[in-house]
Length: 414
Image (cartoon, rainbow, N blue to C red; front, side, top):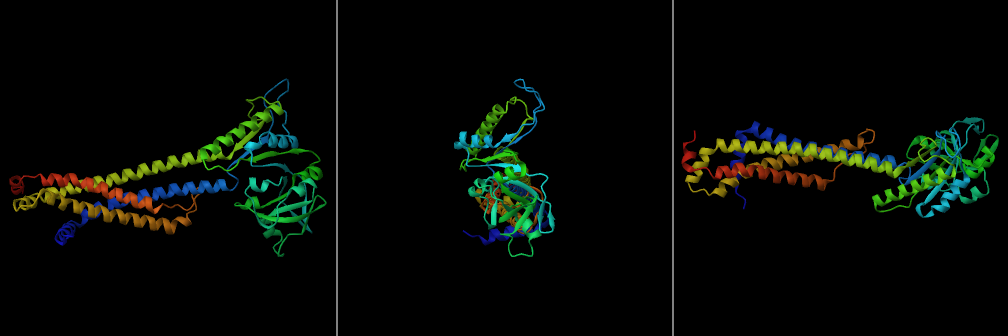
């Protein structure tokens, strides 16, 4: 039942002790504020890391050849490992159950690229049709390289959106235009976009064309595969690790490389990297929780101490109330109401201020690996409610002490 006299007492007490009430509320509000901001930046770090991994398929497993550093099976160190088309085809056949998409890359070095009289300086390489899915490429115009292009050794290319904007800015579309690559005309059949501008400065042709016309060999510079998407993250990590181990086992055996020769081949596993980053992010978020909760506890302890002071200051008043017939729970309620009121108002004040700050400032934060720091409103409100409960608990003990004061001792208090 709403007791207006009780609330008048609370406001009278606050007015008489404005500075003390303000400092108590500030400690509680700052605790909530710090906790929400820290949680927001923890989520922002997770968003930033997820964006980094979205640049390529997060399930990608890759292999690159290197140079042997150890003797093995009578072969001297210093051998340059060469991945071939046969490696790509055999891996795709033998480990089909672990692979969703696969591509090999052939880097074309030393080629000249011209559009009319203009000389272009962009990365040029060959890839398989699945490269589109391995790299999360999005087509904005035309089409990507397909199986027909690859089998027929077609002289076609796709270009990045940045190349389109820089070189073909005066045209409605570059589709159908021709690039002169080392004296050979290649038709532009598509324009793609990537999340990073640098990756839109690439010209991609079919692998077979790059090998036949540009290199004259069946060598490839890298092997890249993705595993099928899975709902369970740990299962996906285990599958990616199994594919990595399968690639390693096959390639080491096929090219007669010592199992402990780390320079002969290099392997990349995006999911393993993601797991490490997510683990680090979770640890940072736990640390943020610890710091924020400790700050809140400090505020709650402050509330408890202030309530003890209030009880001490009002000892004589409490004695008079009890002499006039006030029940113990009435005394407890009087003290608790003030503790709950200060904690609730301060807690929600800190929450509102921190949420507004994240809402308006968060989207404009430009820090590496931090993207749009924010906090789930339900989590934030639940934290404030927990704070109010803690403040109630903290205020209960001084209130119970007040209720147990003997009337004679209270009336003698000066």
